Image 1: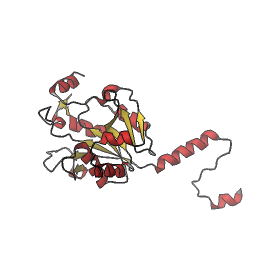
Image 2: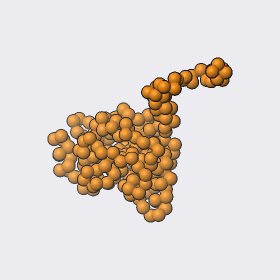
Image 3: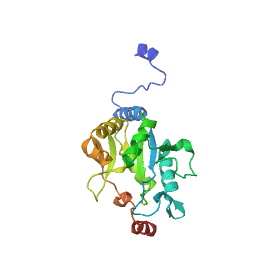
Image 4: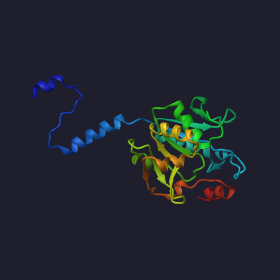
Length: 225
């Protein structure tokens, strides 16, 4: 009706009632515009006791795991940050404004994820561990395409553990509250949150994408491809 056209915003789409496909496109467009944007978080690794050296400095095909992981996340996220335990991180290739220091001591990946939400609480975080040598951009895209922002998280199912893998996961802003609640109960395992909350669990197309390096033998396997 003409009286409606006078009050509608110029950018408001006017669609025929029987044009179902166009309605679905507009709904999908609106829904995606309301979803929190995604920042990347590269977990820089812990003490690497079994490896005997920092995993982030290990080099495969001429590129360190740190630079490789940061580049992958930067290709698919609005911004990408590196999670580090303290000031003595020794990272030279990334500006300090994109480094998030742990605000909780000795909490491992849990503390890194929580510290990220403490820094930016209203975004979703695509969290990836630095020691995943077989992850490619297509695997990150696969997870992003499966994202359900109405859930606490979207995670790959790890074939080896049979559980969600917390170190290649999209954590929605609602996860922040759950992280704090579980910590108050004495839990500091991100996998426990994924198991005990409403998440979108995804079967990865490539199970090797979740292979992580813990020992020199694992590193040799990664170098061989």
